[in-house]
Length: 107
Length: 118
Image 1 (cartoon, rainbow over the protein chains, first blue to last red):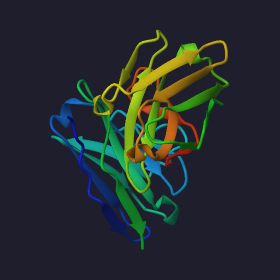
Image 2 (image 1 turned 120 degrees about the vertical axis):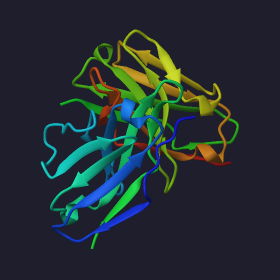
Image 3 (image 1 turned 135 degrees about the horizontal axis):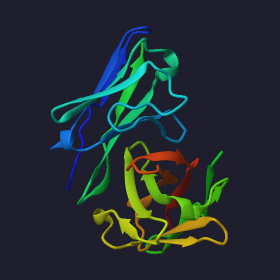
Image 4 (image 1 turned 135 degrees about the vertical axis):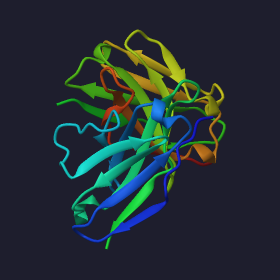
């Protein structure tokens, strides 16, 4: 089955840049999206099609992809960005696959 | 704006069937595709099943055919049935809308906790 791997945690100081990686086989041939999930809340789509932001998502959230690794970058991280982040892609055998999730802590 | 609301029993006995319904408001259920996604306590997200506007369904192979999705267009609702549940099926269950022309989920329900226990 298809798998997406993320680091369990990322720590960042307020105002600094947080980068979250997501890796998987032939990920570069798929579209990747990212969700933010705060404690006790439903996930929210923050990036889709590798680099696009839905309306209402702050510009400090950006996405990129290089080879088989996608990256979510939060520039000028704010305390409200503290959350779990999940990447997701579609695979023809496993269908909708979520990454293992990364907890972003703003120290 | 489009809203999704899950409903169903919060407690299911082992070996029985989990049944949940998602009510869609401010959108026609026939205009989009829909999914169920779950999150075990303290764990990540797991896609369960998908149903599109033509009635085509797919499910996560790891659930080994225990899953059925159905739709009631007259009520703008879709449902999930998961048979032969065990404690491992204890999770928050979310219904979600698949975005137009993209394999992402742009709108989610608030989620409902289902506990499998005798």
